[in-house]
Length: 195
Length: 195
DNA sequence: GTCTATAAATCGATAGAC
DNA sequence: GTCTATCGATTTATAGAC
Image (cartoon, rainbow over all chains, first blue to last red; front, top):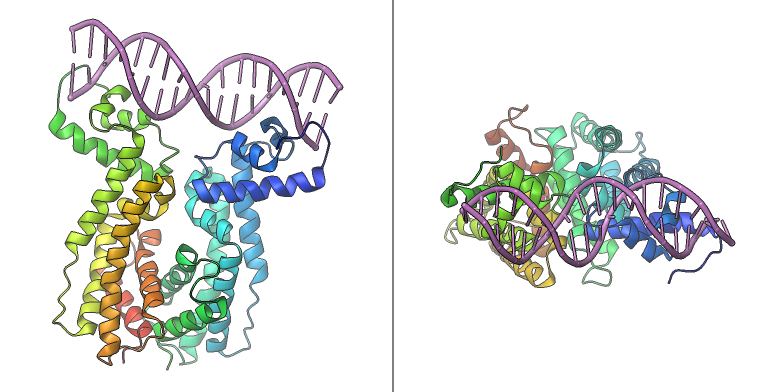
């Protein structure tokens, strides 16, 4: 697979990230060697260091860009009814998680392999995303269309429930994505006490 | 920390397992060396091999005994009303997860580092536990006290939601365990469509 | 049962040629 | 930008002394 010389920086860079993400998600950050990543990309190990200063930076870069993309992709409409906003969030979170299942898996499995400084940065981004859901729940309670004892815990519970789809979903399985969204929306609507 | 000679098999064996569980949960299976485990136990690395044939067997043993303990601890009462059984499951699962948070973390984070054969065994045990909840949901639907489109998905969703407590719970935090159980039971009751 | 010592393999990262 | 080659550290696991 390794080719001899020949520069293809435009495609090698993204490929390094893609293969690292896939292998880290599959086997774990610590279990994957730079040589394995290089082999998947089709270069020798030394060539990777033209794209990342070291392995740790590669992991952090993957998690950081994933969280940035997640935050940029979610568009709330504060003027819409809270239940409609919650339904949009449920469907968005499931779709995004399934479309980026490797990165989602990494972002809550490999936090422990980040340096403390890198960990704080990623945890902060995640906190912002959780706050987006919590705002919807608080608006729903204030509007009298949701009944929740503790919106903070409900936020954590709902995100855990929705993210869980990545644990069992298989392409071409019993249910398509639209139907999965319907079912989880039914569960979420009930959980927040909507009638 | 390392002592020179002196046999204490009765306490060293359990200690090896306990320290391995703690370190694997904290840093990940692949990231923890046998030397690190030995140092935490207070022996030299070679001594560990009196208690496990290799590192892989140590991981599998931790996951297997955890799942066995989980299955043995859950006691369903098929004669009780479905909603009471679900409440019992919710409170049991949260309490057990918090009491064994390291093992719970391992059991769904390090499956990928098991050999295929070991993986099948653990996945089978997990499937039996999921089936225990699914039975309750199906009974609840049949009794007309729950409304669920898809009990299989609801099972996965509820377990993911409940297990999520281990991601944010900190001893001595804002809420005690009883209160957390109350809140999650409220969410679960709503999710299954109970009135 | 635990120690010391070590074999054999692999790791992350770098140097220098092209 | 990628290659080959390699350094130095670290890994799992084993052998043999006590």
